[in-house]
Figure (cartoon, rainbow, N blue to C red):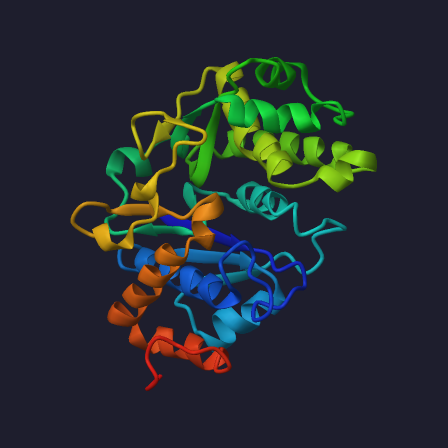
Length: 297
């Protein structure tokens, strides 16, 4: 099974920018642990990135990707808030079955055969609450282009979507169609007032909500890692508790604010040191001005 990951730095330093994490150091620890956990079960792991990120992840940390694709040195005039654009482009380049795994997802078992062999794969179905409704209402009036079938979904009181912690499958033609629509939605709206609102909410729309809407329109089933739907604001401690692996939890996803949770980041760093000390120490050296967990690194 081909596993793919995407990191677009937008020409920002991985040593100075936290990319949504508690600190730059934890961002690198998270990315490293995500890759190393995947490598425990898969050999064919590809990174889609840019030169600046590759200098740290590959040249310095020497993360064990089978192949590195420098696709995002000239991705276009997008702000760092449009991070899903790089993921969409990664989906579009795939030519055989794949699973895209976010850099804040960690596994302690191989994905099931049912999941690996499915035409379309996602982490879980999300049930929309007032959380997503408020987000979409905030940007709705500034959207200058939206397909009718998608408009019908975001006008609902409960807006459904699929969480893209993992996304993939064997239906490559669907992903080409989906990626084309996603980029049309992103590019046609990334202007005027919407350009200032281009944040997490907009990414959710053209990645996760669009994915749901298009599969629903075409009647395509989606196989999820978590069989039960989860409300869009219902990602509890079970998704970040590194103390529960591998016995109680075998899949963690530090989505949203979980990446800024100090307890979660501390547990993650300790686990990285325990199981992959050489990688932990390489990261620790990069941040010598900060006090590491263990002085001998």
